[in-house]
Length: 122
Image 1 (tube, rainbow, N blue to C red):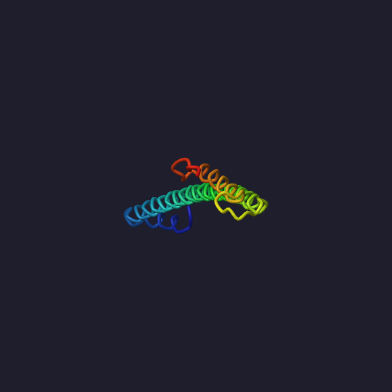
Image 2: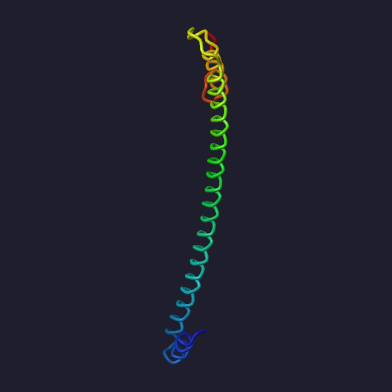
């Protein structure tokens, strides 16, 4: 009990008890404020934990997408290298370079989750 509450109680004894009631109300208000602050701290802690968990989930998804993109980029580089290493001919569609490129692109398209179905061969 602090000095103010003690003084209020002492004065209440001589003032017919009405000041003691004020001290009780002040104590109740103080307990209510402490309870509210505790609830706010708990809410803030829970919110921070939830935001941290969501951030970790988003970061994991971004990392997974980055890995998938890197894998796809490696596949594309392999196709480009095969096209560049294929012999050059004057027959466009029947050339080995075009066949390798189309075969590689079909394989990539069929592996894509956005692709509706198999790509027809020429």
